[in-house]
Image 1 (cartoon, one colour):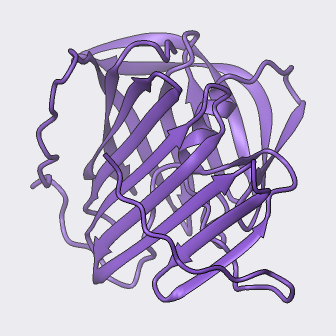
Image 2 (cartoon, rainbow, N blue to C red):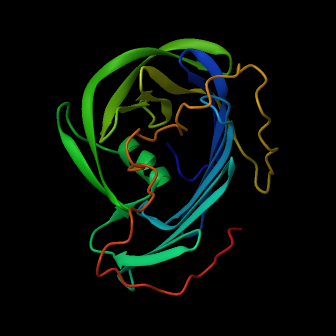
Length: 259
């Protein structure tokens, strides 16, 4: 996937075989790196949520800042600042702020997807990634041939497959490194995101907001919230930090607005 080309990737979402909304992944090249934005309207499982994840990456693909906002039954916002110079990762979530040492290269949910897509490992090999609040393991599985329906045309393609643990998530990448499918088992059902469109953006082009899908039927509201690419366990891929540990230094909350 060419980071030098501004582009947007559009996905259809399905849960338990039913239409569950849509999401859009936008890549915006910057002089000093890349800005990645994922927006999603998730209709199933209930409650319906609107989500926006935003990450600013350096030239090596490591995050400098990450912001996540989820609107459903109320709103939840999390901000993370990665400072390699100061050796600290600062997390702000609601009224809780804390800092932890930056001891190794660390990823957020969006940079993790791009990093897995760029892996060059053999089948059966495993790569470990450090995340805020934990770690993820990406295992290369045997290649598969699947149907990819981009621009309304279904075509069989050979794809690379990676399993993310902890959790039961699978990431599928085509030979150009595009994430063409993301799946996750939640309980007895599977949550899927399938690539349906790749659009190159012109300089300064502004995207229209995602509209809520009318196809999804109401479901039991007791089902857990799911985000594409996020494992069912305690927010390992999403990058949400655990409760503050003893010895974590506290810092005054610093708010940043994203351009």
